[in-house]
Amino acid sequence: MTSLALTINGRAHGPVEVRDELTMNDFLREHLGMTGTKFGCGAAQCLSCAVIVDNPDGTSHTNPTCIAPAVAFNGKSIRTVEGHAKGGELTALQKSFVEHFAFQCGYCTPGFLNEGQVLLEQLAKKKVARAELEKTITEALDGHLCRCTGYVKYHEAVRNVILADPTRYLI
Ligand code: FES
Ligand code: FES
Image 1 (cartoon, protein in one colour):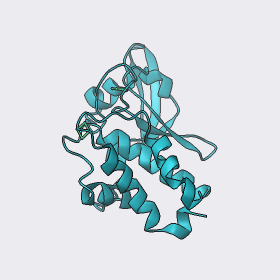
Image 2 (image 1 turned 135 degrees about the vertical axis):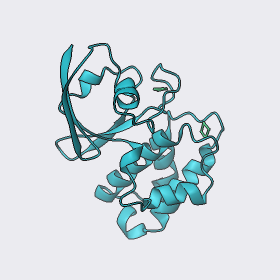
Image 3 (image 1 turned 60 degrees about the horizontal axis):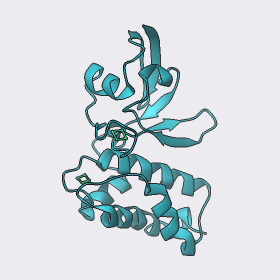
Image 4 (image 1 turned 180 degrees about the horizontal axis):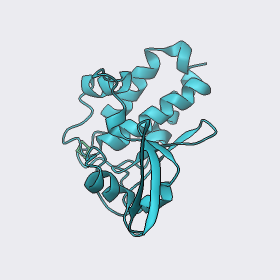
């Protein structure tokens, strides 16, 4: 057993004693009841289980949770799909997902949403040329698998948010 304390969606959790082999996915879903983070392949191959990790230096990245031990997140600050909307108000990216019918079963959606959000935040800090935008989105979403094949819609939904605010995201 190891002590685990972390911040999830801005709220402190723990310290709590957890089994060393407990995965972060099981910690979120089974211990905290945060079932927005999905469990797909269980082999770090589909990224439906990915959450956002916010680093102390202000950068963020996504990380799968299905095979990662919960204790590996000790001291970290993460965001899950439950943390995006504020006061019942969807983010621009969430609205765009809905408007573009980006998801069907929705199982892959939390991972795509987290990845898209990280991309938007990165572009807000370091803008990209319009000519590079399609490649940038493709590369950002690469690795996220959707069995309902919603790839184009997800891509369009992310692109729409960026094009709606070009001075913020584009050179
Ligand atoms: S469930 Fe974690 S990558 Fe597929
Ligand atoms: S919407 Fe069903 S797996 Fe992507």
